[in-house]
Length: 155
Image 1 (cartoon, rainbow, N blue to C red):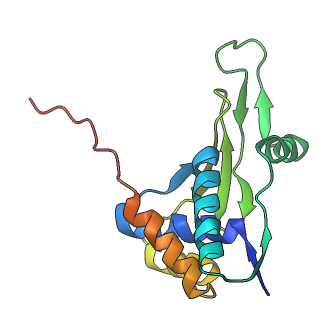
Image 2: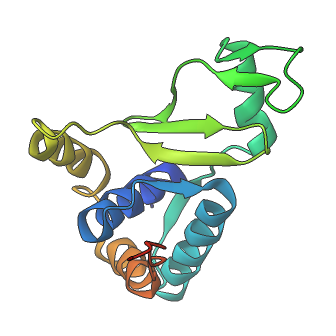
């Protein structure tokens, strides 16, 4: 039985999604749907894995608060708090929590001058040691992903 973390699935999905579409972030709820469908694909392939779950949204935010990630401003009613620094939820993946109560997983900033090196490091961490059935399930989810067209006005 092999160990597999949902964070590894999430990281693999984010790296491949960034390579294919340039998308570098995903909401918590979407990440849970993706990992559960990948896990169902693994179960259908009759593969034996010991799965480590992603923490609940409340627990992640509670850890962020205890680490002092947020700066509060009670005078500003529309934005009462602000995330001061990126909270690394997994290697190379940050968690960003906003006032509208959305938690987003995001690949940490990739600079243009070191883009290839940074992507290779993330690829080595999340994509190198993944079983074929897991990678096939992730690739199926990426194929089903349709990026939203940008709303650009042309005059």
